[in-house]
Amino acid sequence: MVAQRTVGIPQAVTAFSDLLAQQPGRSVGEIQADAAQKLGAMLRSAGIPVREPDGRIPLQGRHLILGVASFSTVDLQLLDELAQALDGSRADAQRVAVFDLQQCRDQHDVARYLPGAFGPVWNTPVLGIWDNGSLARRIDGVAGCRQMLQQEGLL
Image (cartoon, rainbow, N blue to C red):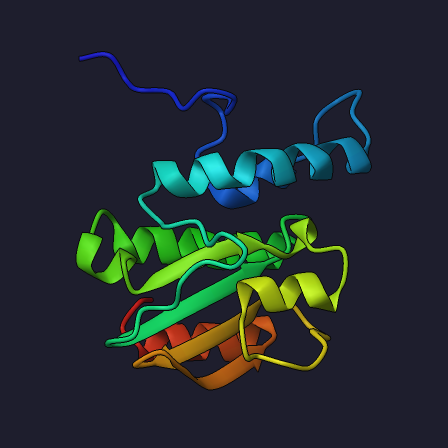
């Protein structure tokens, strides 16, 4: 059987956090820019929905949106944990969507991904939780996001 390879992602990259691994002859800025470019394809490859700006929030059930900084090793390590925990579970994967905060130029852009979750993002990652289409909670920072994902049974 031939292993599938996602276009644009080197085979050596097996985890989200590998996106930021040092590469001889490449600057940190170049590595971070590549990570931002490749994150969406990696999420899709892992079966994790990618949140689009102005996307619809489901009106029924509990839905989580996680915004990560593709330049942050700890944020990408949290994605590694999420991908491992989901491991192909479509039902659980449909409850959470992920986006890259680096795609946002300002707080207005963040609000397009996290509608109703007003206020500045001071720490990454950021997690919004919606119940039946209404924002129930917003959490900033890796410790709080990890704890909530665990409480939701997603880690």
